[in-house]
Image (tube, one colour):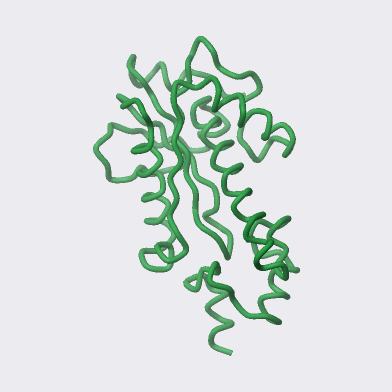
Length: 199
């Protein structure tokens, strides 16, 4: 289970955890979250969002927002993903998430193997959402926010099953892409969508 060891190891001041949701889907934005937890008032049960049920994530999202020192979200649009590629769009979303914090931080812990080029001292933590409580909290906020966006988008684009697949390339999604073509929310730089444009 994640703990506070990474936060304590890197800086005695405020440490933010950052994670993203939505690097792999064929449609929708990429969303990042940044969280500075209160070490004396941390919600119990924080973990990698992928290891939690939807119901548990929803409960923890509310607790994180209520009890964290501060939190922020950053979004990179489909147009930005197609323009600068998904890696740099993810870095952009992460930067926007940290910029949205209402307290400045002394250090940022980033899930993954690289950090954005930004003004904060930072450390990349591979599988950080399973090791670091701040990153785990960020993973929950990012996933919950993005899932809501895709459920809302599914109402306007009902053929693709986004309410369940959240934009990932499920069989239903791919079949709908072939039948109905891409929507404005599809990432045209991603191979399955780009290949359809060549047909």
